[in-house]
Image (cartoon, rainbow over all chains, first blue to last red; front, side):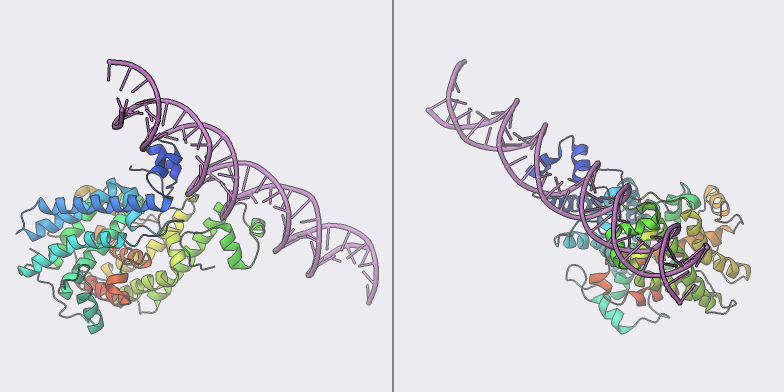
Amino acid sequence: MAEKGASSLSLGAIARELGVTTPALYRYFPARNDLITALISDSYATFTEALEAARDCIPSGDHAGRFRSLFLAYFAWAVSHPQQYLLMFGSSMPGYQLDSAVGELADRCFQVPLDMLAAAARDGKISFTFEGFHLSSKLQEQLERIPPNGRSYPARVMYLTLVSWTFIHGVTSLELTQRYAGILADQSDQFVELEVERFVKSIGLN
Amino acid sequence: MAEKGASSLSLGAIARELGVTTPALYRYFPARNDLITALISDSYATFTEALEAARDCIPSGDHAGRFRSLFLAYFAWAVSHPQQYLLMFGSSMPGYQLDSAVGELADRCFQVPLDMLAAAARDGKISFTFEGFHLSSKLQEQLERIPPNGRSYPARVMYLTLVSWTFIHGVTSLELTQRYAGILADQSDQFVELEVERFVKSIGLN
DNA sequence: TGTACATCAGTGAACGCGCGTTCACTGATGTAC
DNA sequence: TGTACATCAGTGAACGCGCGTTCACTGATGTAC
């Protein structure tokens, strides 16, 4: 299932991976697009599970610990499943039309860090506020509205989740496209750990 | 030159953009690979210029101002040249073999924020240190070694440049692949500004 | 100034290749009597 | 238990299409005498 080549997701490549000939795939999927949709859905499912598992390794009271575990797992999973990560979060593929059902899976994945930080905020374990920053009311509204599932979250929780996600996706993306190659060499895990730690401190998560 | 479609960088598409037929391109480039290399090189050149211009808008003593200007320009440029940004920093394209000469251009681009933060550090305008963090000596060495051009930079300057770059690439990448669509809507610039500001404060840049 | 020729950007048709897709068919497994 | 038939996963050959590339050719621009 896991491949190594770039986005060379040809039917032939997939079939070879499974030890079958190309037309055999048509017994399971009506067209290439559906096959890829299935691969993406599958990736979201196992990725979300990996994140939840990492979270549940740490007792629910230890918010900072859960945060670390969660985001380190994010990076580690992506590094060991590069193809699948790019399938979910990479730029759109040549002939592929995104299926609308995938959106929900993406939301459920985003929900994991969101709920985690929401729990921490509820317990008063996040000291970050927007004090001293210029937060437009329009953005605040936007952050409080349309949380993935319908429930509303405090703006700062949503904001911090977005920031964390953005950063971890940034590292992951640069790592997978080998942009750190000349600079960090094989020390990128270290880099992620350090930065996670710095983030935890900077928002006063404990 | 600027296109809109995904990585549908066919010769036909490029030729159409220029109002020519496909084989006309072979008068200027021996093969598709060279054409794309040229496009990437061109992107790096104009992108680097845009960053330098943004930096030079602000007097050289105002480090925080330069930092803001630089990183906001990064995001703005990418948003208005999505295709070119993905060409430089997206995942590798189907049939394209990266040219080795591009590496130098990438380094020169990275140099812009690096030199900026180095100047700030030299003036004592960055209060961040690794105190309180567990920085392995191996990573420290790695950070001080192999700076793009040969000169060596303090580990914390290199580190902070990497962090900033990682974050700004993260936002950019998620914005370009429309992953903020349901959450930030058209407020993503605001989000970037806020986060740049938070970063400036968190490392005590002034 | 005018003619003859060279240069060269760009065209249209054609090729080979890979990929997604279809289809008739094989061969094994399972079920009915 | 044994034969006859249905089911169905998988195959091999073939198709159409798009794309990168080649090539002979056109038509305009510029230069030599």
